[in-house]
Image (cartoon, rainbow, N blue to C red; front, side, top):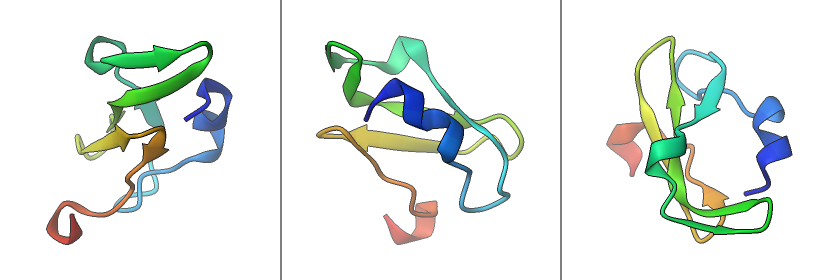
Length: 62
């Protein structure tokens, strides 16, 4: 996931802003996050980034 795309994403549960949780990034290539997770500060939910793709499914659907 390219870092500049974060502004286009929203939490699927509450529509809050998502942030890249820097300490969770385990793999990067240049400006692209390959493995890590996103965090919603409004509803406190986490979303994984796997193989460069943010998985924005609600927890019960993962």
